[in-house]
Image (tube, rainbow, N blue to C red):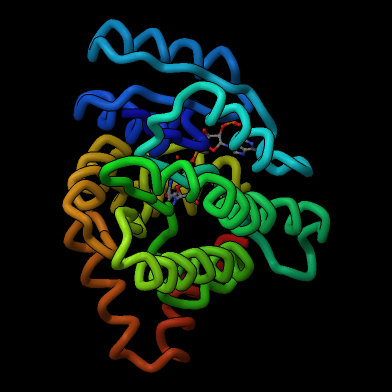
Length: 259
Ligand SMILES: NC(=O)c1ccc[n+]([C@@H]2O[C@H](COP(=O)([O-])OP(=O)(O)OC[C@H]3O[C@@H](n4cnc5c(N)ncnc54)[C@H](OP(=O)(O)O)[C@@H]3O)[C@@H](O)[C@H]2O)c1
């Protein structure tokens, strides 16, 4: 059976791909960096004796979801897993960040997983048991000043995942939402976070491998939502009991401080 992973070239997507190969899945890997995808495909073949095919594509470009879905269905009629992982954040005040750049982020973080899920559900329904993993964030549980639109995009993905999971509960497709906290990847650099903020985040960061292990275990166990790491579970839990204004003040104290 095959698993399709978006944003597989590095970070959490790469670690999830390796973990799925270890669990016996062949892979369809998508991101822009062809060299990194090819290197990963070679590692998958050598370490885990699984096949990996790659597609280098800008997933925020118009029509990307259809291109990926057509490619995937040409590669295999045995698709069993879709991992909607590709995504990024933009750090800064909404007013000061370029609108076009923010809209590109929304396209990748929200519209792409929606369109890809819609296009690939018919293929997933053909598998005896199928799984969708949507990679959200602990930012989904609260507003985060200076990451306002990013947090909103991840809240969207969490809500979409839970609703879709319920709609599909009598079918063969299980939907899981992964909500990691800070993880040591290129995320902070891509978001434009400064060195001081990155140093603060690094103190509590998990490795992508630890996140992927928790994610794949929960996915294949059919769980609804997974927050890897005790600290992340506790802080996400607190957002449901502490007044929103206080939660936002604490988040602003961490993220706005270095703007
Ligand atoms: N790291 C964290 O602290 C953290 C915490 C919570 C949630 N997350 C979420 O985890 C997911 C993975 O992020 P990461 O931390 O692993 O960051 P990362 O190291 O920057 O990886 C992002 C992945 O997405 C791909 N990607 C980005 N833009 C793309 C585009 N336009 N078209 C195709 N692929 C694209 C990148 O590949 P190319 O550049 O090769 O295209 C890369 O494979 C994201 O959804 C992120 O929001 C991360």
